[in-house]
Structure formats: structure tokens, C-alpha cells
Amino acid sequence: MRVNEGKTISVQAVCESTGRSWDEWFTVLNKEKAEELSHNDIFQLLNDVYNVPGWWAQSITVEYERHIGRRKVGQISDGYFHVSKSKTLNGDIDRVFTAWQNYVHDNQEFNGIAFSSEPRESITGKWRYWRVNLSDGSRVVVSVGIKTDTKSTLTITSEKLAEEEAIERWKGYWKEYLHGLS
Image 1 (cartoon, one colour):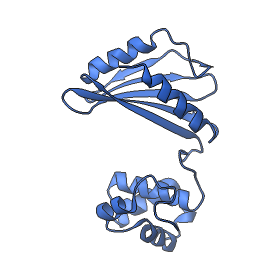
Image 2 (cartoon, one colour):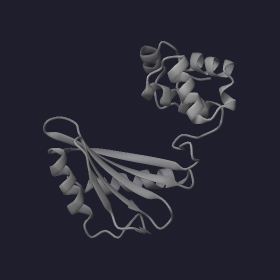
Image 3 (tube, rainbow, N blue to C red):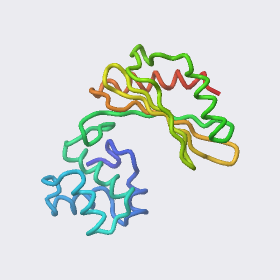
Image 4 (tube, one colour):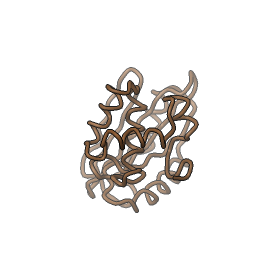
């Protein structure tokens, strides 16, 4: 296997954080017959038996599933694909969230696909969310989080995409769409 072949996290990062390389983790999981386990069971094995913290257990599980051909890059455990684009903007999360709300106020579609629901919003102490379902069965989730005291990150995620080919189409669309948001 080539170094970082299709992986979203470098060999160096996984080694520094978990004490093992990707190949070492794949060997461990093969010995545990993890290819016969569900996504959640692999996660639990890593977390409970090998004491891998939650985020790393999830990341190793996903990379292992890619390694054995169970999923592709951008594919989640339910078989659907998703893609995200982010932009850092000046302002606190409320200012950036309000800018997003104003930016999409009159929208009834994204990328030529009509909304099938009214947009929904929710707020937590650290996050602002905006969600809408689309008529093709996919959905759009926008999250705004704190980056610094004066900057926030807005992330748009297209979820429940039925086909891998949709990833590049949405990635390009969101890149262009975010270009006009400031």
C-alpha cells in the first residue's frame, strides 16, 4: 500500500496520535477479523479494547472500511455520500449566521434542485445550524462555529448524495456559491 493512498489523514498524524501507522492498524484489525464486524463494532473494538479515543477510533474505522472496500472516500456507513466546503469569515458566529440567513433568504433551490422542506434553524452555545431537505432526497446542512474571537467558520455539507459522482458536482457548486458570501 502506498503512503496516504486515498487517506484523508497522514501516516505521520495517525502515528503521532495513536502510536501506530495505518498499516499497523489494518494488521491489528485484520487479526481481529474486523472485516466481519459492523462499523459500530469496529469503533467499539478500537475504543474499548485498544483505548483509542473517540475521534481517532472513528477515523481508523472509516479508513479500514475504505481499505477493505466497504466504502469509498466521501461515503458514510449508510452507503450515501457527502461533501463539505468551508469558508472562514470575519465576525462572531451570530454575525456570520445572520449573513448566511440573509444570503439564502429568497432561495428555493440549490444547484437546480428544489427545496422539499422549509429551512430549519437551531442554535447551541457553540454552533449555529441551518438545514433544508432537497427534492432529490439529499439535504444541505450549514454549520457556523467559532474559529477565533473575530472569525467564524461556515461549513456547508451536502448529505445523503446517492452517487459518488455527485461529490465533485456539489464541491464545485459550493465553492462558487461561497465565493459571493462575505
